[in-house]
Length: 463
Image (tube, rainbow, N blue to C red; front, top):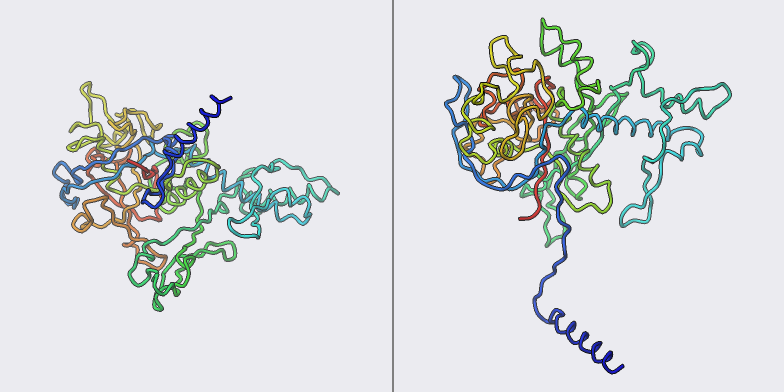
């Protein structure tokens, strides 16, 4: 008994001697959950490189000079976003709209199955959200006298083309697949006049914000600009509504005097093309996808805290494409588009009129060619890729040499020249010179092309 008491007292003394001393600066430290490797992504370590073309530029291409810059670590998708991955986004939007229609049924008991209530953090009232566990009755059949079945049928029928818009069978109405989201305008918050004054506990009386706002009017999306006084943090939030379905007609509209109807009908929709890069996506749609992907991650409880998914900056993209080889002309490191056996290293247009010499006609399955030294596939050819950087021919002269980036968030009333975004990597329809790591081009952010896709990145937390 005495031995037990002595052991207990000894343990108490040891523990008390290890406790933090009172009256001294000891800091506040908590154990953070380690950031796990995001599914489908690879780690790009921080480093520096010479940004810009390694070779003489093509005549009249107006390529910038080289500049040494440093890039922080980040995660990057191993391949471009595929049709199958983007289809998950489309199906989520489709199901959310169907659940919304079903939740508006006149039978309150039946309608209540399609929504649920949750507590708003820090407040007493509840918020109504869609019930994702509810089964959507896609194949419900209407029977005379069964009012509930009839209402379900009418709700689901709104998801399809009807009347004069209906052509063949029951086709999903892709025109209603709109995604609504919000973001904080940190660029507006960072303006000197808009910064919060801790001494007066208020914003400056002349503080103003210019934000985007979207709303529906008679079934059409209306984008507008709101200029208002800055009084609360909520005033810094912009909203956007955007149709997220890919432009399948780009296969016909972009190539005149060319038979591309099969690609228009099947490239995105057919299951056999699920592992091919999604195309016909505007910069705005890619931006919306990144927001949805972030919210999808946050919707799962107890996952480690992580940065948001986003499009890569132009500098991040080029740094990743080089694969750690500072002087690499192409992602595979060499100065030629063929390997030692004479095989092409990417999917592009290798010869005049000959698209198929590399084995493919249009975009090929992702990861069909070898990765670069970072483990990234298709950083040259297949499809060009959107970046978050706004195109400016002289941007290299004024951007910082640490995480360089130039971004202008264009408004709906801005001229087209302010809507240009940098695209990188070259595509299946481009010549070999466009595949070089340092080559840059642009496209307008609202345009959707059969040769442009995208991939996401996520900033890395930690050393």
